[in-house]
Image 1 (cartoon, rainbow, N blue to C red):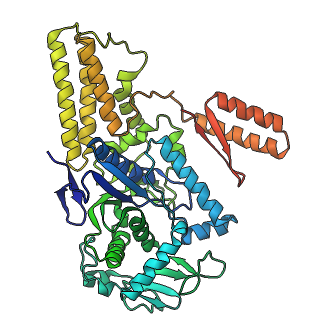
Image 2 (tube, rainbow, N blue to C red; image 1 turned 120 degrees about the vertical axis):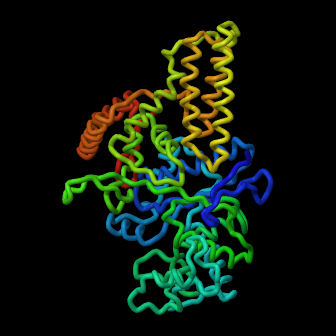
Length: 484
């Protein structure tokens, strides 16, 4: 079976054929770094980490680009509210995000471009769009002229007329068309800005990804990923900009979109639970550091793997208790207290040995068939659980040590393709310890303020002995995480 990928643009699964044999060019929209990332952001990162890992398993070289939006309205508003420089704010959250993704075993991307590092290229691109008649300047702003793109709306599967009918008209709007979108925003007083032919300002949101993708991956790419909330207008606008810039269609061969993370929360007014999108603005987001303090971070990956990436996932208070139990069951074959026969020994019951060898081959085939079917991780994961069960059955039935070792190595290999650290069994930690650690950090902060540095250092040292690492930031905050 050849690898098939569901394409949002065509609404069907298609055979995966790259622009250049053996090379996958993949761009994934990253985070806007104005606050700490939550598990919904991590879900998207894990989805495309798994995609990349399987492509590499299949023998592809993957050139993977993930951007950081490090200037926009939310960043400016947050920096003003906290009275911190916007650069320090974004740097803090970029560093935090990368640390947390490392802890989740997300492979580092090939490139992590930032908007602020691409401003010159963005200005050049906007000038090209104006010269081609695809954009126009209005009072220091620059807008993309959607009427020049008859295919506009193809990713959302709506016509220009349908989109226009559903568009919200802003007060005193002077654009040529209500659907025209900003490529460049004129600077407001005291806002960060860059000089441009249209006056000081900053890039619009959508143009950044077109320019970054073009810069790092070329005029056309194989995979573009992101959440379903980005299909319109962000990814629609990327298509319009990129194809106008290069004159090449399609900009992207395969559009992949992961479902959203939802949260099940209690509604005091209705006296019942309700499900809503996980969002920092709604206050229902579980930040990644909270998850990391719960125990084995692979439990989030198990939670994500248990569903198809295109489906929505609903997080509840019990979600990670269940995922952790599943993870412990899967990793049991590698726990130190488990006893295994000599891995080189061929002695054992012939029937049990043959049964286990067949189960190992079946798991391999089932796993690959599932992943070839648009990265169907739930079926692939089920094949690992089945193999894990067969391993313990084989041991009980006296299968040979060699067959058991080959089965365990297959389990570790295929788990690794999904990003699971099968042979790493972290020390179990209680979520109950988190408030006490936070209290000790507060006490340490007060001791430092009172210049009681020896006692403050003693708290730091004793926390380190408990595998808790502290990091003091320049803005006075202290973050912590368990060492693994």
